[in-house]
Amino acid sequence: MTISAWILNTLIEPEVPRNDVGVLDGLTFLDNEEKYLFDKNLLENKGVLPGDVDKYFQLLLDFENKSKPEHLRIINEHLKHVLNDFCFSDVVIQLKGLRFVNDVDEDNREARFKGKFKHLSGRIFKDYKDFYYPNGHLVKRFKIYFDWPVVCEIDFHKSEKMVMGFYAFDKMNRMYVIREVFDRLSANDMAYIIVNYKKAENLRMNRVFIDPLAKGDEKELKNRFGNLESTFTLLKRALNPHGILLDSARKDKWGANARIREMLLPKEQIPGLFVFDDCRLHRTQFKQWSYTKTGEWSDEDDHFMEAMGRAAICGVKYTLVDDNKKYVFKPEKGIV
Image (cartoon, rainbow, N blue to C red):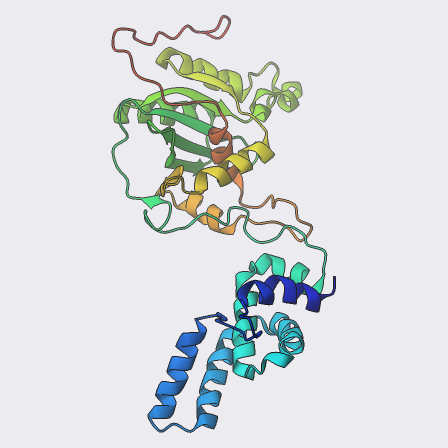
């Protein structure tokens, strides 16, 4: 199908109901054709010359079009061709073309209008809105309820700062980003942060997940310093007496990103993910993490996005707290 035929079929005919004598009845345009005609008549009734009215609307169009001139030029040329018999003014045709271009997502315009092969591009989590609920995903900090399960996800790096994200789940299993730590930390430092945070806030935090790389980080140092224990082993030993189980995080990046996208979308006008407004590194990476030119996920500044994604698929869900059955943690053999 040629682009002219495609535009005619998908853009014009569905909006052009005809009466018995073939007269067009009720086209709609960007910003509403009636509004355009009303404004035009209003200006003319005030004594503005018709030529000046056209210049006025052309200035508005030029201002709106300046960010997408190539796509509009392509569409307008074909619109003039398919609408040639309808006796529309140039302004009306441009309004319709502008509406059509605006209705196509910006990332899809090159492929849609120019036929270029489309790589994934732009932000990875485009549905994230850095505004306060109900207009976005931000909420003011509040006290986490005692029965909400909380998990800590650690994105482990040998030569970089450690990434620690804390995530809570409410009774509807909506996830909240509640704390972030980004610093150079030892296993004992991380254990101290986790245990003290749990005690200070009276959190229901029994699970911590860490990157599987933490299990083998001691191997390259054994030749120099003899027998050493991995970060995973040291951290697990420090957390066990406090009823906190350490486990390896899942490395399913596709599944994690898909789950985050799903949680960002509102269900019954409420999204499934919220961010405390003082978690600035999460907010920044939400807005900056993007695809590379080849359509791959960028490896830059993605650490908190990885930690959050792993929390979303870690399997922790809200369950009722049974006061008659206190949680008893049984340390694993060989750790304590």
